[in-house]
Image (cartoon, rainbow, N blue to C red; front, top):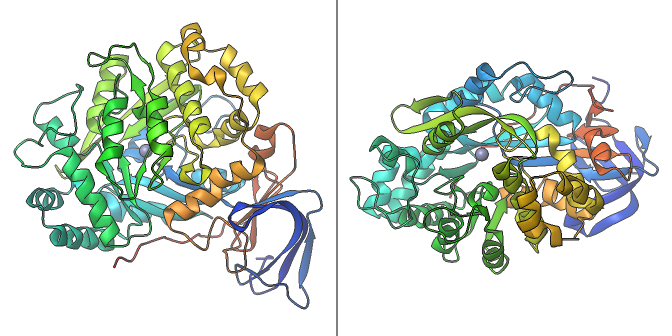
Length: 499
Ligand SMILES: [Zn+2]
């Protein structure tokens, strides 16, 4: 290949956005050798002039679904894509190509069952360009659940370390703690609370969450416990989301796709369906041990897929669409169904507004990662649109004017004038996910960092700017140019070592 990493490359005069190193648009050179950013060298083998172009670390997707059995089923279920639109669930090769062309260089699949891990790795080995890791649904494992109930912290940690090693996982994920057990015991899409014991066990959802978070902390895994809590998508679920945040009691935890867990309404609530963000964001802002990704909904057609079979069954029942469910060796389960988010749908408009309200309510961008929970809220290729919604208030207001009138009247979103700066956008798409994932060599442009770099043409239209980077480098190799893949390097597997 032409871009040999053995040579010394210098990228000259880029406008660097490197928030991890306190750099906000200063002009500078980046020296690259052996796939890493290095100190300035006496001479370069090759120079590239980036005069006036915006330079950021490569994007890092902390929460996506790109491999494994449910993604494969999602591919089979999707209708033919509209002209020019990527499939809701692209093939593994197209997934890598599209991410790389977008300036993303690392992705985590956020829900892989223990039994599915070997196959998921085989599939991910085919994902070009990006470094990749999996978050393991270790708490679906029967032996792990029994040890959580028995309450021996050492035994829980030992079993989790064993599962993480055997599955070559990066992190531990819990999806609807205990949900699959309730589902198999005949409980369907009704509300639970975290104090309810799991059927047949002396273990509540709250105990499950706090004991798992403790085990992950004891094992010093790179990423804190990754949590998809109970009651996903249900009206009034903001209350159980608040209980979830409180359950960690100072332990680090990451709350996944918080948008789907932030609604008022339902029987237990005196208000109608709407936004429960305000009290949740107040708690979150006061508790620096917590982090989150949003799971933003954007309007259009996509595919919902979740390890939370109970939530998928409920969604299929209320929408009436055909769905697929499967179990993972009788321990976990998951559900997959197509969904089209519409501006004029009351519920979809609320979901869109609730997600944006979250982004604009979190004070510390270092604790929030941009995600659409691909493909659940929207396809990852819609990230540039989401970045424009965050960085361009006029654009957001225009979009707001098109949504369901009841949401326009009642959503607090109308009162937000905040616009994300380029550095803040760089934080939530690269620097923060790198830090939260526990990847010190990624998400920044300092000496020693992996030379994963995205170069953009400055543009007042942020969605156009972020949709097509001029150049993307992976480990110092030019992999994409103007939306086209130039070189398909393999990318590495991120597997954690515990202890
Ligand atoms: Zn997810």
